[in-house]
Length: 321
Image 1 (cartoon, rainbow, N blue to C red):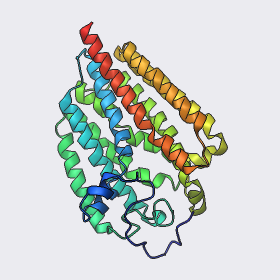
Image 2: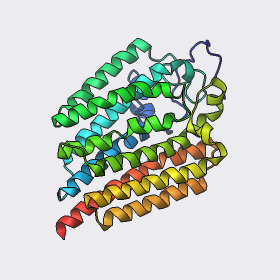
Image 3: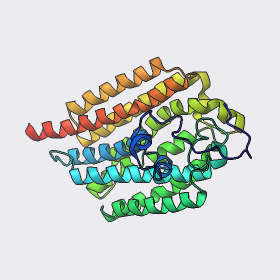
Image 4: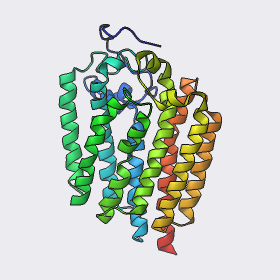
């Protein structure tokens, strides 16, 4: 449902936003003055940060598996964890600045801090600078190739929010942007790019197109009314068939990455479980039920954990063999 006309006055500050989990720690425990900024960075909805993080962890573990190391480097895991949450926050803040007029007209997003008047555009810009400085400090802990590669993602970050105005495939650009960590995680360990990292990245892009199509079905009526585009509108009732194509492509490409890196049974068992999970998503999806779509979108965190734990188990078992 459309929230109001384009020039309507900002909505008053609210205690939460509609798609945040009930009782999340920001709404429950964060200092009131911090809450608008934590919501702006999506710390009340961390699923996006996890989906940004997992390809970093996968690539790191896959590279270390190829080098026959016994377990993932904990220091790198921590750096990627902090970096993913910080840079996801910066990206969301930038996206909200760019989309503030559209967000004010969509029911699900009208309560976000900028369109609701909780945070000004100037304050949001200063917040981005602070987050990016933290992200830079994280990036500088890696080798030079990784620093350059990580910085190269800024171009994709800059153009992504505008894509929904011009193409029905903004989810593809999101995938290219959001899964850049699959390349960065590999180079952080090896200092260079190679085929397993590219296959992992390509599979992760296909994964993103699929799960974000599910997410976009929540807003399809509002998007259509205000002239925005998405794969949800492009695929329509054929969405389950398209999801099957993209999820199958992700499984195949991830499998190729594993083979090329020398993965063993534990990883491929986790990959098989992931395929089953994707089949469940498709079989139970109701594209006309926003709650159903949100639940299946969030369930992709399970995918992240299955593959990461599969890779970690593979490393340990190989070291013990």
